[in-house]
Image 1 (spheres, helix red, strand yellow):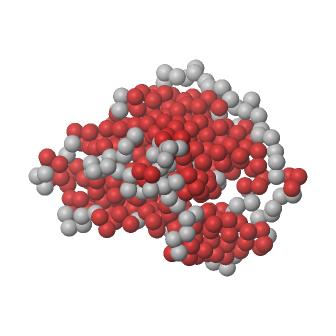
Image 2: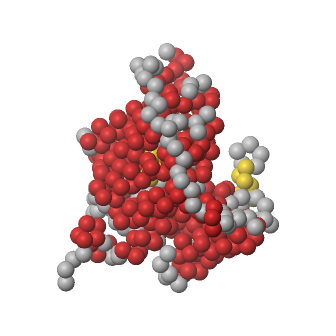
Amino acid sequence: METSFLEKKFKMKKYNSDPRTEFLAGLTTFMTMSYILIVNPDILSQTGMDKGAVFTATIISSIIAMLVMGLYANLPFGLAPGMGLNAFFAFTVVIAMGHDWEYALTAVFLEGIIFVFLSIFNVREAIFASIPIGLKKAVSVGIGLFITIIGLTNAGIIQQGEGVILEKGNLLTPESLIFFFSLFLMAFLTAKYVKGALLFGIVGGSILSVILGVSHFPGITSIFSLPPSLAPIAFKLEFKNLFTFEMFSVMFTFLFVDMFDTIGTLTGVATKADMLDEKGNLPNVGRALLADSVGTIVGALLGTSTVTTFVESASGVADGGRTGLTSLSTAFFFFISLFFFPLFSVVPAAATSAALVMVGLFMIEPITEIDFKDFTEAVPAFLTITMMPFAYSIAEGISFGIMSYVLLKLITGRKNQITPMIAALAIIFFLRVISPILATLF
């Protein structure tokens, strides 16, 4: 029997997948990522950028990054301008530091250029490979908890209390009803081994949202719209402050957070999908890392903040996505949203939040494979797991995990388990932690 073009390109049989599964997984990933199409323009528009133009830039940069991820890396990950990085762009660089948004875009562009060189010379791939298998499993668990908190807070099930304390939200709201309906529909369908369970849960929650009046289905004549123009923000880089310490500092912050958020996301999602090889490495990880580098450069040129691999990719992986066809399917739905965004806006946050909580459950499974009897493995893993949700940062979880791993291996006489790369990472993380003290001394 002749092998189809899709099978030759994506090798789905190797991963026990098929085109329908990959397509549905891509749609699920899109549905759980789609909030970025609303949130990113909202955040960046507070810097004075045109909201409609940012919407278009968000979609086009995401599509290009996912084309690289799907066709070049053959991996099932979705990419888009990252949360946290867009907040740093708007609220720190522009609003707090007083720079204009063109300056921030230039810093993002420079970061993307550096990322390309780090990818070409396999520096980021070496970093990925240097992370011990126990920490890789811990990253998956930590991301699971991190996703769960995002889902619960987005749905209003938990909320900000006194200071930084989280507390129970109001459970007697239409949004809460939609969340729990979606969650238990997903759980029921998952228990029945229904493919696309998360997607069907999101659709069910969206229908209930319309019934309850939380979302409003647009009229037939209103669901189509042409994409807003990029003209107000595209190709607006500003190079007059290029060789300054402040530009370097801003660029390095983008670089640091993006690098370790991406590595953490790839590690966690790939671990859950059982895509790591016998050495604990992800095949084609260098190509995957190049995808977000390209997306970041294109995004900066078009007018949006750093493009990165989305942790919500775990939802598509949980629905069976294993190849680049999932990424291409997600890109397809991003393209559709350029013209039918009023229709996609019907999906309530409560329904996609339920999907994130289910994914959180799926991703904590590798915790059973961590060696908790060896405390030089257990403590770093535990810090990795807990710092991600509590510090609200994947990068911070990796940072504390690696520093504690190297320290414990060193003081217990197991220097042979410390590779040069992970030792270098630990030193960099430590210097970053004490940098505020060093700044006051010099």
